[in-house]
Amino acid sequence: MTVHLPPLPPVPGDGYRPAGRSLVDIIEAEHRELLELAGEATAQGTPPPRRREVLDVFTAVLARHLSGEEQYLFPAARQAVPGAGERIDRAIAGDAGLLAAARDLPDGGLPAVVEQLRRHVEGVDALLGPLRAAASEEELIRLGNRLEIAEEAAPTRPHPGNPHTPPWNRIVDPAVGVVDKVRDAVSGRHTHRSDL
Image (spheres, rainbow, N blue to C red):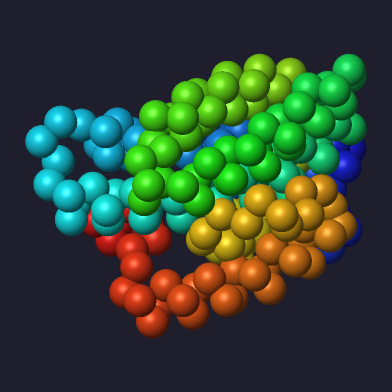
């Protein structure tokens, strides 16, 4: 095994292929989704109520995405990609700034958030190719499964003060996520693209 995974149950013998999507494929799809949501929110002619809904979904998808990356992508890349530690440290610091900027979205901070998001996507995309080369497809699928589970439990609102590295983010993010989900349910806030 080339990539550090959290303790997992043993797998059956040769020929076993886990079900699910690769961590790299998931991250790339989420980057596209975030950029599309940002484009829809900034498009001319979008009515203000629709823009508010799109911004709510954008913020929720962003918060879940960054939480998942920090829990699984960055630790795996730190171990598997030689010399990636400094880039990952910069990405984590950028994530905290991106979350802080996302808190200001109702006040017109979208252009700054979109620019930070583009820098985030470029930085993370530079890690995905080397990670794909270093890890087996089975490892990437197992990481992808863990990422999807983590994102379902993750916060749906920006919390830049939360821990950004394991093990603390794996403990704090799900607890904060529960509170966020209760707030979302009570307020009727949309948090998934399918809600739009």
